[in-house]
Amino acid sequence: MTSVVDINSLISTPEDDPWIKMLIYGPPGRGKTVFSARCPNPIILDTEDGTSSLRNFPDTEKTPVIKVRNLDRMQEVYRAIATDQIKCDTVVVDTFSELSNRSMDAWLTQLNSADPNRDKYLSTWPDFNRNQQVMRRLALALRDLPKHIILICHEREVEDKSEGRRYKMPDLAPELAKTMVSMMSVIGRMTHRRDDESGTVTRELQIEGSRTVEAKSRIIMGSPVIENPTFEMFLKGST
Picture 1: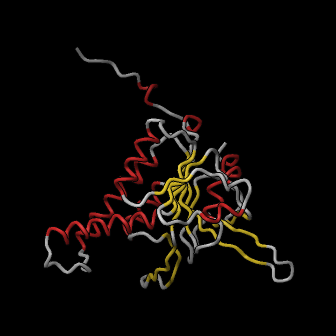
Picture 2: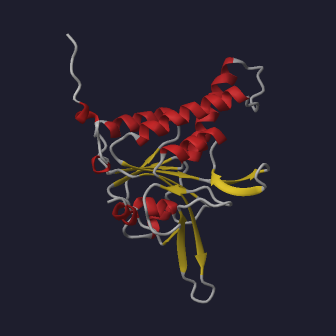
Picture 3: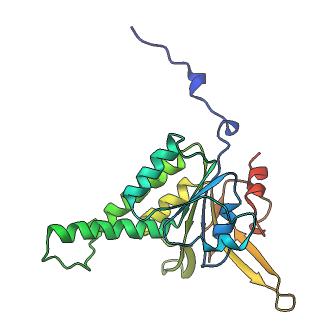
């Protein structure tokens, strides 16, 4: 007997998925971690001891932080979040770049243990490709959680000789970076500028791509660069 599928049950609307999936990158000390800590009910998965800045602000100093130093620990924490053993509304990985590096290091250590004569500093294309696939699957799993997701990355500058330009992008392997750009709702570069006279610091999040910066936003925010951004701005923009 053939079952009848209710097509309407397969259709969703933006209102059915209120979660924002975001990747933020930029130089260190620009406010990426503090921005993330001010998201709704966050948990920060700290891969590199980069959360000390949270102690500088009364509203972020008690943000829950879990240290994650390898993929096994990451998978353990992911399962706890997915099954609501860890309750939160926002999952922050700080940084996804370092977690990718640790994943690669662990794989090379495994290879070196199996072959003591192997050059322990040698990384081949299959090694890089394997790590990209591992991290891509992790990013997809995180993105599909019914939570707000913020992946923090370092940045690097890339030269595109075919287009005659240099531009900033998340510090990830090239194919992984391309995948991340397509899967996230917002890709933003966080910087700041300081007024020399007053000493006032204005944080800026660029969410529209240019010749020198990789960025995008599926959320209409009204400006390519958001001054002193808050997550609340994106929540309002997504409604």
